[in-house]
Image (tube, rainbow, N blue to C red; front, side, top):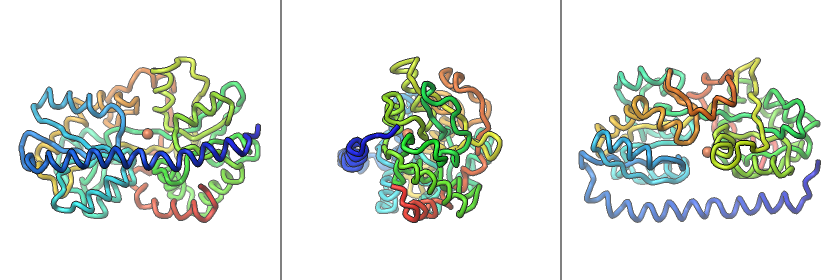
Length: 352
Ligand code: FE
């Protein structure tokens, strides 16, 4: 099934132009408010300031922490790279105590840039498996985000079982993908480079490009495109379908397939958090991280219908319908190391 060129162009151009501007507006407004507030509050023991790349459910979780501990949480949202750049620009004067991301690469890159403070926390080390936290204690995953294959159960009898299979000619003009500017795409390809090697990863991505994908910079919109018949397969984070099933339509016409079940496992990205090197309130910040990994762990992961990071924590019940799976936890700590390679690879093979 071929999507007419005008639709392709409209989707692509609209996303590219509007999303960054909208994000910029949010960040700018939040900055203005923060600058005024934090001057008075810097160093106040009862407040923790969070820069967060997570966009869903943050407030209710922070409110629960405040209710239990009396520590107030102020937070500013933006994209992971924007907030990382901001930490770098602010340096020692940053009001941020905690950097929280929606992706593993950005927090690792922040650690590499010296923006994060290593923690000595037996609580965090016990709660979070070693593969999901930095070896030097600079950052800790708080939820797992599985990036898998979505498909139309009506039009696809046998979904692809590997990321590479999306490059099979069978999927020509039937594939929706997120642009390479998105960290989710970068981390997926970083994991492919790590596991398969650079040349093989390049072949995989070139196969996707050869299938003339529709690039859509929203996982939700890719799932809606499957429902609308504009594409038959896509790569999405599981929680986007979980949200549609839970909040919109329990019969939403898209299904998930777990890739790489005979190999490295489905790609795992994470939401992670760290105490910043310049934190005015490092004690409160560490307390927040420890709470999010323990008493607040199920609430935190369920707020966005993600999988918990802490061993033994229960997942949101809507996820039970997706079944069990083999996951590539082993790549999480190295997604930052291969980020630049992934971005470079996109340019090389003409991936948008
Ligand atoms: Fe997301």
